[in-house]
Length: 263
Length: 254
Image (tube, rainbow over all chains, first blue to last red; front, top):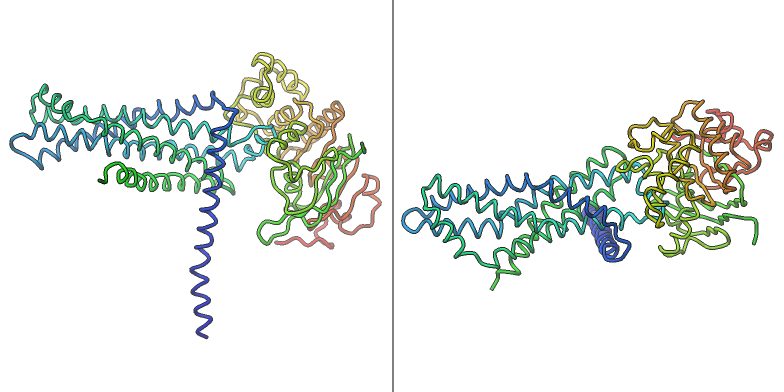
């Protein structure tokens, strides 16, 4: 009797574990295959350019709006935290560091994950369930090279530029609040920002952005590629792409910060 | 050289515990039109996908022109694919591309032909399948089901393949449109001298385009012969399927 309970218990534990290990293995194989095909010719530059436009240019408004309000709120919060004398230079510094190191890369990536990760998963998932991926293969074209490689490259390359744009807008948001709301002197504020500016702040954000961009495209492609069973499957794939990309972004954000800043 | 184009021996394929193909043996001669009939879910599509290398069979052998394909590496598979064309059940047209870009896809991606020339060629093939040149710049989603099938056919034959696969070419079409597609299939296959493999459960279509019919049931080919032989056979499975009776040896799992 007791043995049966133990067996059932192990079975309940084992089944999800085996499933998890299988899907982890599938993901790793997918990554290896995708990276291999992204590095070997033929390259589809037209598809890459299209993705750059889609991921980069059309995300500018979203990233701009996200970062400007992030910069504004940080200026407001840090002022109320520090108060008193010398607040000008402190607020400028806090806005600079938090926007460039954290807020611009993380918030932009999360927004892009919602916008692009979902779109990628939906498009590739629909192609999968309507046999368009099979059709590609029968037309002597590898979906990994034709569809996935351009998306991965575009994610990797475009996100850093988006984040640089977000840095500027976010700092500008801090500036606007600092000058018009908190009554700082514009020249002093700009001086303080420039004095505190360090290369490491910017590179941190850029490195993070590249990793996040790759993760967003990877999750979009992978979940789309794995989707099955019509409209419901594609919907599921879309959700999974956004959720998994968002979680990975937050995890890797910590890992990268740990690597760059732990002394 | 034998006159066998595709030779399948003892092909097995399972998904999990479900055996889909359980020892398929099938030969297709050069220039022949073979139709595989069988109920839904009997593994007809899986068979075609195995031959094309879209799925890897668990065991067994598939030879095309006496060359084993099941063990082929990716770059060799490309050689096989350049010999093949396929008309998908739902058309599987790329909806991010225009109609002519769909038709000319292999030319644009795999040859150095200019876009202008590719478009001219695409329009020529579109005309062969009975579509007017002004369709060329439309998007696939603007076309009716029958027109999408025609575009799919044009895309499958533009490279003049030696082997063409048709996956339920008439499913979802009205009887007249279905017959038009049947005629186009016969025309384009004969025009190219291509070997064709069609899977269908539309008996009218099977009768029209088949040189030979094979029936797939429970993962095996249980009967094959000409249309005439099919009408005379006393194989109870074939009789039941051809006449479309609910009663008989084939049990439908509800």
